[in-house]
Every structure is written in structure tokens, then in C-alpha cells.
Length: 283
Image: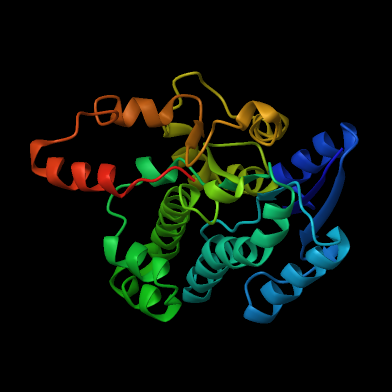
């Protein structure tokens, strides 16, 4: 049995993951704002440092895996945009960087980061916002959203999930992660019946917007379904899974971009492709 850290452990998909892991006999160190083994606010630098250190202390220096499920959705106000950037992006990358030595100590550790199908189904997310988040410049990221007014938190959410997905793909294949035996991947859910979704469905305007969104299989996903996918991605079956973003969204991503991916490497990128081939050395 292993030891796993799970952020966002007190509710929604994070709680469902905890239930599955504990049911399988694993030790889980939950991180959340309340009702968790480690109570910390991932929206602040001190909270992230506290969470990282407390988990390492409880784990005794070795983690068999981690699930980064803590996240915030859009809500009115500029402060919400800041919280989204801090929790959804920095609350993932800063914790994982702090935990990486403990994950490497386990030799075959698995990490699952919660992304979203908003990464490919939300139009007009500013690239400047994504770049600012990748640079860890939250103030600059917020500045790029000023012109969007009340829609800014929605774009902050989309940008945070794009940025964290790109970070996963870039880092997963490096010597520090793949080379250290750590498998780093992301899961991208669609509309899942979490407390946040239930709250949105209780508002008529929000409910109409959500129900109008294309979900080819119909309905909404269940947190326990997502948890089953996460547990699979933490298992030995995921030894060959590296840098992937797995969409579990009822077909919405495929609906919007069936012809966008996969696509052939264009001729204009052939030189870069060959250069990357020459750079590669097996870890």
C-alpha cells in the first residue's frame, strides 16, 4: 500500500479520490481549507508553503503519488480572478516542486493534476494570460484580463487550466520527472456533479448556459467515475503514461475539435522536430 497526497480532499472530486484510495487500503494525506489532515489556504504563498511542508512531514520523506484536485471556478469580482490564478496554477506547481524529491524517493510515483476541458472548449482565452501564469506573474496575468470586465474570472479559469496543462506536459518528460521515475499526467473533466456544479444549476441563468453546452453522451459526470480514472492513473497501469492530458468529459472536446488533433507535423516545424530528436537522450 502507498502514501498519497490529495489536495481539495474535503469535497467534490478530491473527496471521491480519497474515498477510493482509502477503500483500497492506501494512506491519504488530505489538504484543504477545512476538514483535512493538512488545513491550508493554497491561495497564499504561506498557505502553499505550509501545505507542502506539512505533507512531507506526515509522509516521512516518501510519497507514492499525489493528486492535485484543489481548484476554484469562476465567480464575480477581480479578487476571484486572483484566487483562481493562485490556487489553480501556483497551488499545483509550487506544491509539486516541493514534493518532487519525496516522489522520486518512491521510484515509481504517479501524479495526477486536475485540468479541465475548458482548455480546449473555451474560446478567446488570452495567450498573454497563459504566458504570464507560466512565468508565475499573477499581477501581470490579472492585468491582461482587465478589458474583459465581469468575464475576467471565466478567462482566468480557462487560462489557469491551460497553463497548468502546459506545465505538466513540459515538465513530465524531463530528467527531473520522467528521469526520476515519476509519471506526471493530467485529467481534464467536463461537467461533473460536484457541489460547485449543483450551486450553478440552482441559478436559472447559469443552469440554462450549462445545459446548453454540448455533451454528446448526455447528462453530467459523477465524481466517483472521475475518481476511478484517477486511481487508474495512479496505478502500475500508468507506468507508460507520461505527459498526457486525459479528457473525461462526455465527448465535448471531441465535439468541438474532432479535426484539430491529432494532426501531422507541418513542414514549417520539421527543423524544430529534427532538433528535438537530436536533443533526446534516454534517462
